[in-house]
Length: 119
Image 1 (tube, helix red, strand yellow):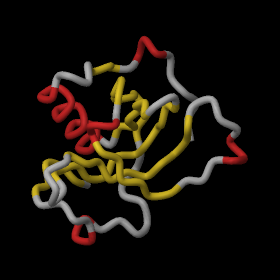
Image 2 (tube, helix red, strand yellow):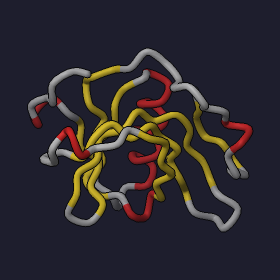
Image 3 (cartoon, helix red, strand yellow):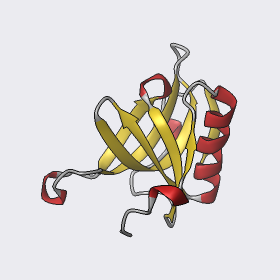
């Protein structure tokens, strides 16, 4: 895994701009770029795999969780996560890329009614 980039190299999207957020997430999936965002006081870095709308109408991102910025690496667990768009703040597409889907990935197993982008 690469080192964290300088903040000036990332593209930050205002959370209130839904079109820009959708475009950024879809571009990150299609181009295999890491995403970084905040939920509460924590900053997360993920490999995005699928993005769409859940049955209850929420936009959601299915991703491989890489790390929480500023936390001890020995205490971090890489795993699958489902994150809701309305929880995310300061979304950024990072310059780092990843090879492809992680083991166990299957968009068919996700309860997305509409899929905007997927690996």
